[in-house]
Length: 520
Image (tube, helix red, strand yellow):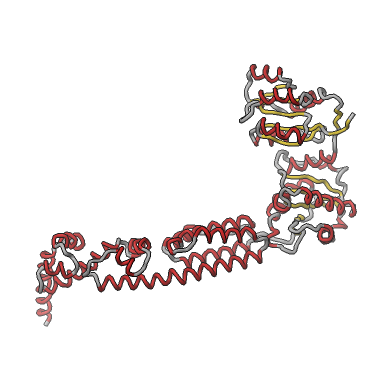
């Protein structure tokens, strides 16, 4: 008979339910191990040939392939595999269908308890010929620590670990599987082997566990006499025995109560696992020696967007650079930092499209460079290059345009009496029509036509005060070919008709003259 774990495959489309079952019982302690998870029956069928589970726990209501049809396929193709059905509904027809298809039992999710789950699993084991399960104490202790760190248990019974951890000092040592190894399991296997060798060679007691299939951790227990040199010895050993680049470990400060392991994980492991970006030449980071600044103010997007809207691109670029420098001083998470920079650059580059810049090409170029960067110094160099390049473009194109805007305004002042159209002016000055229109609306607080009319009416007021010409003559002198249109525009701007404005100015002139005579 084979002594082994009983392999269990969980088939459930709800993530929370899968997580709940994974932590409902101490699987390894009871002789079981979860070999995989699937979100529907079709996905599970693809995994069975590879994982070869002894027992399948399957939801009955799932997309693509439901539990009833799935159990029928299992009975036909894999009669040796035992299946346990879960459902949120107490439906006799479902019960009958699944049991007739060979299911071990049918359990309602709302009433599922650890004792019921374990009893049903053992019932399934009894139906598997030749399988004798065994319990692994190492996995048992790992499971207790993992459950505690994830918050499924409120505390750890120190007495249950007394025989396992006889020494007074603890530290957590770990690495991010996702960041360092991706899908390369050979590298991960090598890291596990080297780590284990170090602990055994130095007579350190340890328990290995993995949190959320992402972070590989070791809880190390050792004598206080070893505390002084543990970090340096560990770092030296890893440097000499791990050839693969980009491997990065963190080790927490020493603690003497196993119940502090969750606090250490959350405060001294998680925030530091992404810090490889800031420590190019370090393989083991002692988190006791590094203080992460958490009080980094959020980027002022309102101010940034206002600067871009006002076309003050130089100030917007300076704002980006200042915030990046501050974020680096605070050791902002590498991925948050890169994503923030890409977001800010995107907004800026899109706003520069009106200046004949190849926005999409430039964006892709910058983003690829940023994504490839692995370490801080390279990041600083690349960001400085991007900042300089953007500033050069702004100085060359935007500031030059401001000078040309001044020329255009002067031209309008000098030629207000001619037939002027915005499109003609933009062509004459080889200037972007839409930006010119934007300029009048946002800087002059009026459109081009309103701006031109205001200048013309101001000239008309001066001529009317002189009282030397007919109103119709003044109308044509300032660029209006239609006399009645001129009168309507004049009244709209001043509140008077040209004639009444002239009379008012004449009366005002007489009054002013009399006052001047009285003074004399």
